[in-house]
Image (cartoon, rainbow, N blue to C red; front, side):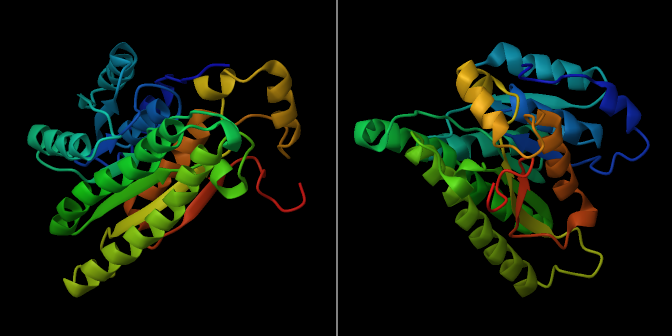
Length: 279
């Protein structure tokens, strides 16, 4: 399976609209898979991309190179979002380099799979720190900047595992489920602050906070599953296949457009129907 689809065709095909021209988007975990696809999808609409990464510098630069080939601006920012200070530093770097931050995509995540009885304190804490606390501290740092401007988009990438749970993934499921409550709370507080400051006009781009919950997507994380496990997983998906990173990225792109200003506090499933009751 191809973990990252870096075809630059979509950027060429959508040069007519570029609805995000002038906006700056920070995408964590932007080096590969879903994160790279989101970078490309937002750049397709004209956004300047600030791609966050932790280890894979060569891969994130490859993604940025593909974007820059079509005239869009990019920057790369290294950090460990498991640490609050690093989250604040990265947001500060983006603003220092680009002068603004309009879109935050909380995409970076890790796994450390073990059964409940074998899960160590470190297994639990590390996954929660990166997947959930990292999203909180990044969003906390970005929110005042968006409120000051009177518009913004925060989108967190959760998972169908946060909706259903999964054997051996108590830590991952808890972190991804936690993003639902985090999203709704940030959405409520952002809307209240915008109303208080009278920034919610009928034609306002708004300040929205949403989550996207992918199912099993063809990325490196899924490719690492044993063949027999992957076969069983695919059998549980009503559409009978894995998703593609760009299918998740299209939903994120949609939520970031001005036309999506009336959508906030929502969780968008992109999972081939996996969460449907009875399947």
